[in-house]
Image (tube, rainbow, N blue to C red; front, side):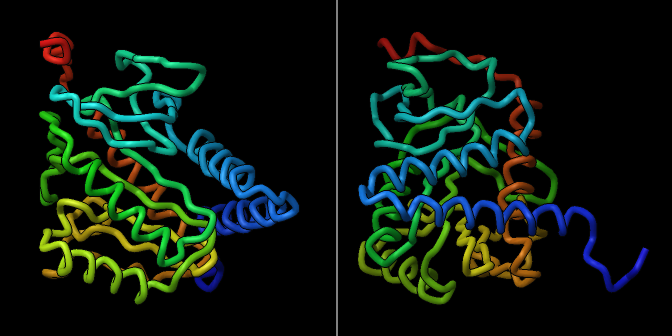
Length: 247
């Protein structure tokens, strides 16, 4: 193997990234903003479906907890195919908070306005009650629903980090209670991941690790993180006490 040549999987994810950006730009021919958004959500979902284990399903809708708290609209909700379902219509569901593997918000362009929307959505999502705990050696326990922001284009990493810091200060709230666990901006070639051991070994006291590898590989972070979540979710014995949602 040529040590100077990119690894096989690096080449693969570079091609996938370029393909997603190319297809996303195709939707620019559509004038209506919602149509562009739906198209790019479909692209993100197709990437996840084609790269994650078949035992996972990808829904849209809201997540609820036993106290009837709601997440608000979530673009992509990942849960096991063996989980109880609450279908509303087609792929639109209500999902039990303890059954959710992760939630993904898809953005065409992660502007200042859109990152603030994501942080508010994250605050609602992270406030949901949940008994499920993801626990593994040398990693922080995950006690709240994992939340990913996936953007095709967007702000540079320093601007995103600054907005998160300002939100915490202005609202006097710990980032644990609102901040996404991962933020991916495809065209800028970076991702931020929570410094909790689930993507990389815990490195410092900072909330985020700023990945600094090849910009062509910034899809790999989300791929790795979600596969780790799916693996630990499948190890758990999950008995959902559905009656608690009717008390």
